[in-house]
Image (cartoon, rainbow, N blue to C red):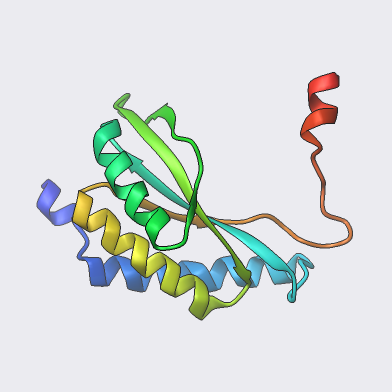
Length: 138
């Protein structure tokens, strides 16, 4: 299969992401996550070079996203990638998250970087809480 056959259009990627969003929300709620909590939605962005990623995340910041520090990783082929999260707090509302994802998918297309979906953490009385200071002391 050629690389062109692997390519998804922006519209196709947005539709797939909408389905994924509903699946993620359903799984969180099924596990007992608090439906009315405020969630930190972490959208994952990746690029092969820092300059390109930097241009994209500056624009994401101007759109209202908080951008976390980039980290280096490797894909399954051993290619070095820089990745970071563009985050935004919101309710666990599919339409709000769809809007965020669509903005970042279009941004990824503009800068020829990768939008790799989103994630968040379970919210509820029984959620695990990590205290960074406590972790450092151990």
